[in-house]
Image (cartoon, rainbow, N blue to C red; front, side):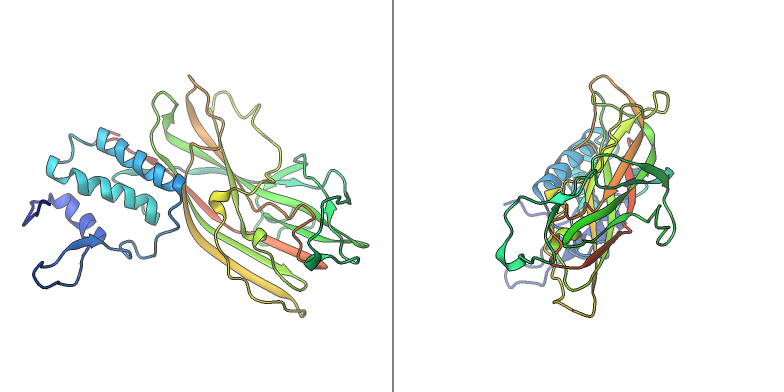
Length: 326
């Protein structure tokens, strides 16, 4: 194994490398060994999913390709490792990433197309004749309005959803999902792609009459590309009702509380903006819709409550990778 006794590091990389690297405790006969600092960017890394690991690798390859002449050969490995750490820790240095400004912040509102008793089998642990599951699909966006501050109004609520009883049938009353429009600082296309990262400071708060359910804390996103000249005609306007496994994390919920149950869950999440989307060959884009939702329980995962209220106050930012001459 090669052993590096010393290495000349350019001044503009020293501070960045110092945050990334820490020295392990000395071991007799071997000296001290450099390692990645888990707290290099002020917080523990998020779960490393297979999708994020792939995105890290592709991003580091992209930076290595476009920045190879701006970074000395001896420092290429450290440079690529730092770019991978950007995604792991949600840290995006301005020298290498451009923030994409939000130019519109809207909320999409949906109600069930119908409410019928569910025909799915019910877990005996949750069987309750006074609180039966329903089939209440959200199929259409009925209203779009500026995202309200606070709770909003009964007809234009803040992003989230509520559920309750109609006699003995539990159903989702509505779903409100946020839609952010970002301006891309550089044109994006499949023929000339560049890394585009979504950074979510996820925060989901749930209240219920008695108990909680992990399904309420699974987020989902849908990035949709378009151009400012062609507009948004033809983009999907169906409510987001499917949870993404990439956003499912273990949640240690508090126990039942007949006096009223509540829990707030926060997590840093970084994802690739160019998947689960509508990219087409030969098209160039300068805008991106990012739709954010906490899909409702679909009348089923209500945990035998009389009512449920979920709010999604996730903060989203979008970063686009820079080339040396941008």
